[in-house]
Image (cartoon, rainbow, N blue to C red; front, side, top):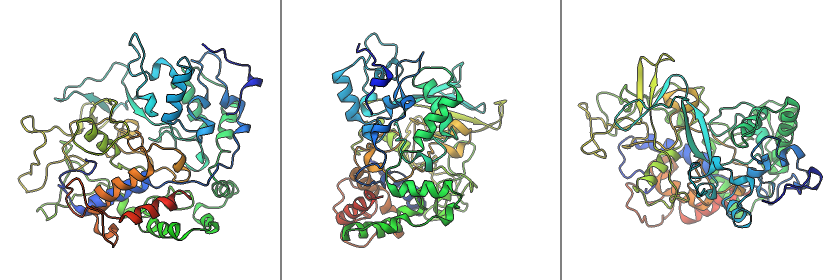
Length: 483
């Protein structure tokens, strides 16, 4: 093993479309809007404004009594403080004994010979303790919750850049501050103990100093000086855009801005669209529809006006990939994810059942698109038969079934430098993400489908083959890279 140098010598550092549309196309369109804007829209200036030669020593160096990992082990400064697949593969080839390859993130930590296929896709294992009002189920509905009530999921490593704009943290919002985030990482990923508040404050202060552009830094400075969020200036007004980028901006404003509005690019601007992502659920976990049935069916909506998270469909997409039911070229297709079902109760006594998610499917034909006695489809919150989830998202933090497979809405600033995308790294490039949404999702919502001749649909989706033309997709990507 290479000896760790002293502190002074440290260098700086599917078919993803749902094959059968069983619910309102307007609901699908709204969900898709949130999906595309939540993940696909991304971009940054040519270079980060924070030079990597000034990395905080406590960020760069492992604390004592850990597995040797520092913050910079996974938030790599030269990779925009994220963890890329290329970095992991290169590091493994040059030094398989690097602290990055700790057993906790091995494919099987108990194996005699450790392998790191998930880590090579940029994924780390995250352990979560279930809320007191949840249980884990097997495929037939038996409670199988572990004694310690913990589950694990595979997730990407978000960049710390622009973290001053994006609280709460950890994709599912389970920590409110960067100080908490730092301690959780030291405990969970570096296998260390409690760190002094002084040291945590130093790490957090450093993270708050990293920005993808001077424009992002200006927003943070204005907020810190007391400027109200809604009064922030339009920092993008200073951008000199090419004709292509200007066209992309106009398309962005028609689509992406619904959920990625405001100067931080994280503010939900269209609450009606966001509300459509929360269909009310019956006791069996299936969606509650209006009766008498309408054509197309109309889901009853739950009331979640304060919810800042959203089920953007990325966990459902991963389920489809895992069972081989989509032709989407998932970047993580070759690695396995856990399969979970959960029961939600009214309270911590776990006596009164609220619902099971995903809902149970008919054992004889689980993918039959059945209807109930009222003529409404029988389907769970993703409007598609679903055997399991690979990640329950924020629901595993709140115990709220309406948070099932929901994640935060990240800022779009700098995401061009943090591929692959989604919480589970299923899309390798920004272009792939835009293709996915244009073909499989936006096309289901007429108001977001743009004029122009579309490309031939290669996979037989219902509805228009594309929401955007090939040039429109290029325009959008060009603009997003400037954010």
